[in-house]
Image (cartoon, rainbow, N blue to C red):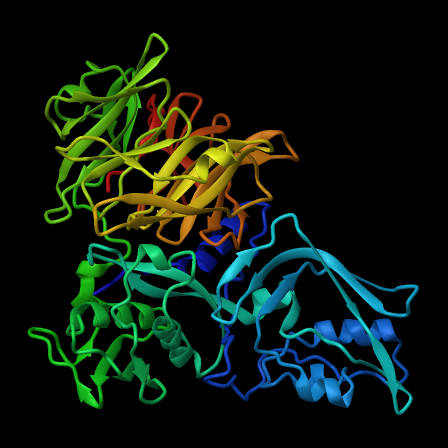
Length: 577
């Protein structure tokens, strides 16, 4: 049975497809190896690709420093060539396992008046010991190295821990993977992007990322039933089948075996592992109706890209809610234009997948109203304000989110009264002009208009046991973008963004990972004018409104909803979740 690829590993292939369709160049490679940042398991002993060279006799201090930086592009355990650029004492004490600093390839190395060699570059980002990437943005990297002569040859005495690696080498040697955790409802797995080095140890390294737990930014928004567990031995892989043997799972409360299995199977499926046998203390797990060798088909209910059965695209035109591809009115009064909607969102019942709840914004006489009700039925006003962002939904709960008056985040559960969402940091950043929940409901992307103009932020949705909800840790993920206009989730690990193209003074679409890595310009071929709003969802063609008409992206070109027909008029496209 055919199965679509899921999760953040889809980014590299998609980036390459987009690059071939446009002049933009992706920063994530189509085929890059994976990296293990920690000491266990050890790096693969084999050499992959072009290995760096030992220092030449008579090399100058600057040449030694450059050689040390370039020697980070090695897959050999312990980076022995890099150590050859160090004094014997420094070579013994230096650790290459304390994180990675990724810098631009056009770095400079200059000897200072003090005789030290200074390296300066644009900082692309950093990768911590757990493989978590943090974007560098507009920051600059500067580091000075002291050298002394050893047997007549210059060597570095004071290397900082970890690797300093050039961006092209990082792209070539490291690959994006995801450790999967559980959303608070336990309905689907949530990707937590990591970067791992290639080699046979990769399956073990990826499972260890699961056992280590989620990244600090995501931790408060997810659950990890594997917490406290350990591997009894390394993960073994034979052809496309893996065996994972765990120990240390608590029996009080009892481990949630189905969720643990879903985490492991979906995580390892990224490595083209089709079946996984999961053991606890050497004994295969025994779950009713689940075979010993499990596949993602056995845990399809946890699909990170699961979409409602009726999830066709929607958009607004002349106050009415309409559907893709024919532009037919949505059922009920919302489809007739009665409410004069300017934007809308539709939620599906997580149990059945049928569209069940709709909310729309209406603006009149300088005031805005949010109307909500069952899909296909009458809507009633539930909230008023001066301004509202377009409403948004997630696939795990029947509730609508939006921002009122620029800083007040509000959620409206189906059939319940609106509730405030704590977002203390938002007001300090500026006014939110767009808010979009991720499909799993664990993250939220916001376009915030601050002192430097509209920028893209991503935060984590945290739900307390007492029912309180907060949007925390809002962090800028694409600082190089300016004049951000809109955002939509391609899946749980990547975003479509409409932002300014400084070279041509216009708004264009981009694709970027949720951690900020891999910013890629999306082709604009076929669009009649610059895009104004974007809608996207897992396994769906992205939609934009441009010049008051609706377009979809297919094979690198924006086309009309009905091939060969005139474009349909509309704005504010979106997909139900």
